Amino acid sequence: MDKRTFLKISSLAGAGVVAVPLVSSLIGCGAAPSGDGGNSDAMPGDAPAGFTLPDLGFAHEALEPAVDRKTMRIHHGKHHAGYVRKLNAALEGHPMAGSSLETLLASITADDTALRNNGGGHFNHALFWNILTPGGEQRPSGLLAQRIDSAFGDHEGVLKSLTAAAGSRFGSGWAWLVQDVNDPDRLFVTSTPNQDNPLMVDIVDASSQGRPLLGIDVWEHAYYLNYQNRRTDYVAALLDRVNWTAVSRLMA
Figure 1: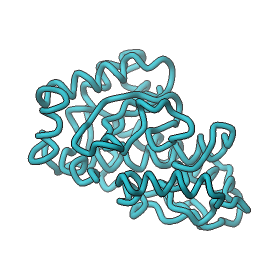
Figure 2: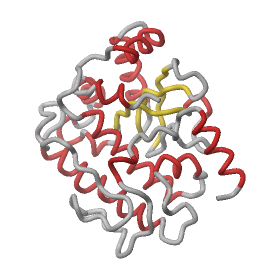
Figure 3: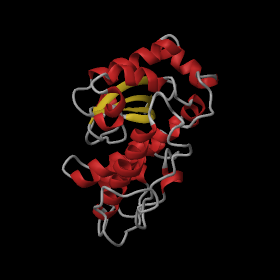
């Protein structure tokens, strides 16, 4: 690891962005894999050594009618699994092999497209399944609720902000609820294109950098079978399925 990367990651760790794991406990490490890493048609359990495809933690139909069974099966078992395989392949012989995914994303540059696209795709989806796991609180409480009220006025305010960010993202991307790097009490909403996320400090704008707590996938593969072009309908339905207990646990 060069000095510049070390200093950047150290500063993020000091702010609690990568020091407290977000998804690493779910997905293994980035140890160099063996075998073919490029099969985007993989199903759960097919990923090679290295990063692994996490279980959903719930049945494919558990989020219906917000997300239908077929979309969930394809989204998790093919799209997400494809990112895992391609990420493991990209890490073969790479100096960042063996790093946690949070550290990896905090260190990559815009021109490292394989790690940017596939590392981002893996992280974003692992976090996505986690905050959608059924069974948690349906509204924020405790410290998370206090921080949301301070930033957005109330629960409805943060939902409106997330819906606006998701709806205005041109093309594919994500809408995020983010914890500020420099002021952990401050939350904000932003969006990123493609599979970028707020951990990518060399890639995303400074105003979008921080610790992602909640992500909304607005790639068409996340909703098109059921909603076609009605993205805002999908976002509204999905936000009604958020596990706010899981979101709260992600705060540093």
